[in-house]
Image (cartoon, rainbow, N blue to C red; front, side, top):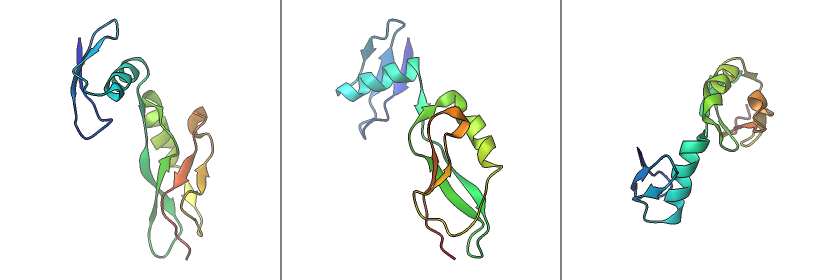
Length: 114
């Protein structure tokens, strides 16, 4: 039996999930889906920064466009440490395509035009 706190809505239900993936403690259907996904294939959004050659700021905030497998997080952060971006950059520009063979892009979350 594993205990989780659901992060799918503001309620923060205390969930319990057993080895047969039976979920209790959820007050909405999203809690069950969250618990099953967390036990079978946990995924996360990665947010970070990369170096940019701007006179205004030294780092550009970036994130994955979609969730990625949790086990790829450290590989992705390592890849981001190697990136150097040139200005101008617009919000949602792709910084890395298919990062670490996940099928997910890293995108800018800020526009820097100088």
